[in-house]
Length: 205
Image 1: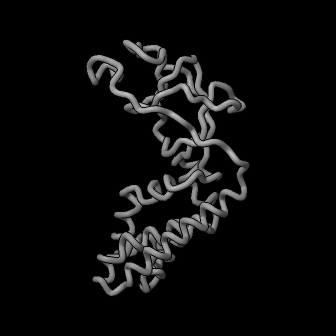
Image 2: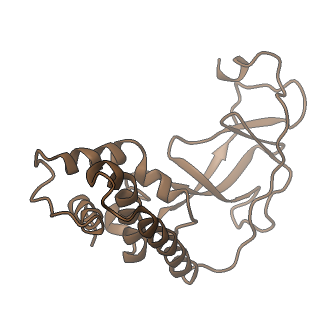
């Protein structure tokens, strides 16, 4: 099972560095890794695939306080833990998928009063729960952290090109492993449009 310390130490191993004894250790390596962690390093990796352990299914009601001037009838606010769309539909079976919607400025726009959405989540009980990560995904994340810190940590002594190749391969392997656990599905389809309301702040008031 992956935890933060084991993730950090795997990243350091990839850089040819010694392990940390604890997450409280006052060492440059730990501070560099913290920078990647706090800077959205895990979110970046979660956005790279449709990871089963991170997928959340939610029914959304439309925002009654928002009235568009044209186009689709209703707005649905994206949740704070949203990272990547998996499926969207007007019903809970997700069959058929919904094609008549727009994705714009933190909202989905559609004509129905409800949306059913499956998405990659960074919530603490979904994507941010390291105990749910597969070994392949954990390896991918560790290599991403290693790639990010290596230039500062090793002063150019680490083979960055080699790390990048290993990172790409780990991402492919993690996606492949995860895909084996999921039935085939259609990618969501939407169309980008211009602003539908006069005044950029109208939706947020």
